[in-house]
Image (cartoon, rainbow, N blue to C red; front, side, top):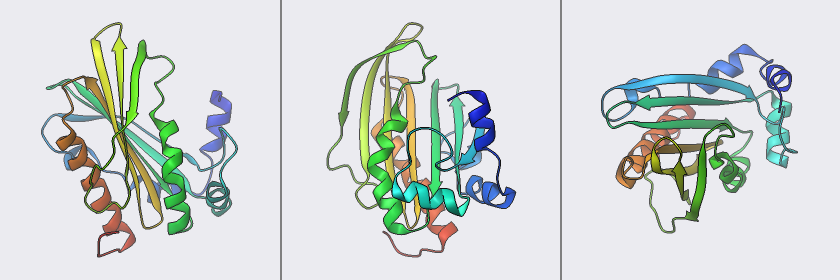
Length: 197
């Protein structure tokens, strides 16, 4: 994807873009202190990248936007990003969860090598049915041994993924899970769902 393609993908209804952004956790809602928002981006679902799934196509036709926020915390030094994809139906959101694995890909400009990658089975996240949970071990030129821990899932008609990265010990699973549960709770409130999915 080039810059022009991304720019074109950002064009759409402002109210739908803002509604998508409001689904994301923000720095004051994250556990611990010292979180700083590094970036926020929104684009129309299915407007660029690989051919969209049927659910992605329906979301594109509806004008829906995906949104992403990136954060950094200095102590301990670590990073995180959260992405939400509001889809047309609950079934579309559930079908999107397996596709979230591609969101875990290493940033092309990051100077890291992936040494190991695996799914984590049986991991429970409050408010999320059948979450996708994965871990990626990497070696960074600047930092040495690093890791990314990811949780993806859906709440009602919204799919989401959280990717936490830093030094290997920077992200205990309990904290990654706490953030995923907080994101799921925010989505449940936004879509008016009162019981766990």
